[in-house]
Structures are given as structure tokens and as C-alpha cells.
Image 1 (tube, rainbow, N blue to C red):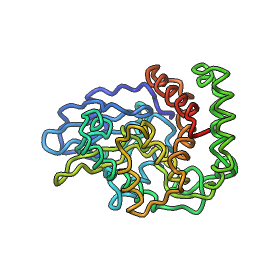
Image 2: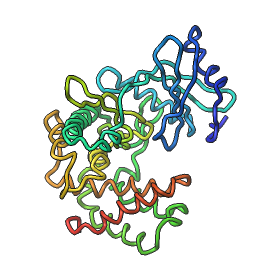
Image 3: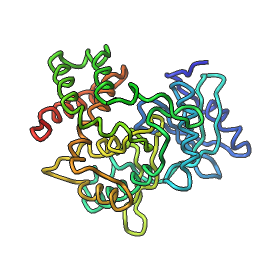
Length: 321
């Protein structure tokens, strides 16, 4: 049975799904958590116990299996939520999981508070956590499959970033949102960097691939803002940590830095490694993720406009030419 993308659970549905894991607990209510683009996350509140997150997967079941296996592997060494229960809903066809509800706010919310010392502390902690993520390695690069085995490398493992971006250019949704002129510029730009990007073809470290402010939860602990959870591992794969570096610094401006140099300091001081031109490389590699967003049919127009602005800013930056 294929997952139902528009499944809107009722309170009775939530109680039915939660019951196998917590048969003696009473569900009071639930609320949908914002931020997810692919899956539905519900905060379930009980009468007696702490709340949990009901995560309803609305993509292929293998996505759920891989993410949940990864969470269990990382638990104890990285700040990720605990997995309490995994099941499949016979009504909607959705795989689902009950996972720990971690108290905190997103890095995005923290940034909106305009508390510069707090942003800098959380940035340092994010770099530290990303270095720890990179300590997990695999025999080769490529997608993570059942049992956390690595699948066939993207495009034979040879310079995948330019090929991935070119593939995005063929998407009907991408073409609907862009001009022919922009698509030519993107192709020419990414291939002008192909020789430098090829130096990282052999990297096979764990990559979150959505290491952005919406997926990083932070909280003030002993007067310092620290990362308490990294969420949404459904796109994780084996590759270069520069992908996560570029994503985290997507909105950073060298003329008005907020996260830097604190993020890179946390990363380097805890075992991460960066080439001399890491800032430029991170921005170039992040183009593939930005272009991938524009291939998604249900991407909100406001977000699509924001992504296009970021793409133009990268292409127009004289430092990257």
C-alpha cells in the first residue's frame, strides 16, 4: 500500500496509532508541527506522560526504514531523538514512528530573536555537532539503503554534483519556475567548477543533507545555547561534509556574518576538516540542493522565490567566477 500524502488524521486516528506503544496512556490532544515539507509531524499530548512526536511518512516506505535505522545507530553519540515505536497504518498506508519530543526551539527561531551572542554560541555548537556527524564513515559514497548499506554511487561516483544539477534542469517543475537563460547559466557555472568538485568524489562520510536552521533544535543549557537535536534524516547519504557546511551557511553573508567564524571554529576544533577555499566550495555545492528544491511540485511559491534569490546571488557573486 502506498502512503497517502494528504492524510489528515483525526484524534481517533492518533489514539489508534499511539495505542500499540502506550496502551495504558490517555491521549488528550495533538497539534501539527510546522517546518516539514515531505512528512507530517504531530505532537501528541498525554494525560500523564511526556509528549511524543507521531511522524507520518508520506514517501516511499524505504525512506522511513532508513531514517529510523539511522536514528537508532546515532542515538547516544549524537543529539537525535529516541525512537519509541515503528509501525504501518493499515488505513492510510503511511509508515509511522513515535519518537521523542525534544524541548527546544529551532535555530531559525533563535536567529529571528536577533540575540547575537546566542546565535554565535548555537553556531559553534552546530559546527561541533556536524564534526561528530562526519565521524561516521562508509565504504563508499552514495545513497543509504536498507540496513544502512550504501547503494550505487551517484553517476558512477564521478563528479556527481554537476550531473545532479543538470538533471534538475530537466524537471518540468524546475523549468516552470525558471527561464531558459537561467538554466544555461546554471549549467555553465557548475561545470566551470567541475574539476575542483571532483577532488571530493572519494568522500564517504555521513551527510545529513538538510542541515539547516529548521532541522536544528537548540536550547540554553548552563548559560550557553547548544544543539539538543538534529531532526529529519530522511535525505542522509554518504558523501562530503561540505554539502552540510554549505547548507548551514546558505543565508550567511561575508559582509555581515552571524554564524561565522563560530560555526567553522566549532567544526574544526572538534575534528572536522576544511579545504582553504571551503566557503566558496560550500556555496557552489549548495546550488545542487537549491535546484533540487525547485523540482518539487508542491513547493510553496514564497519559498520558491526565496530559493531563486539565493541562486541568483550565487551566480552573480564575482568571488565565485
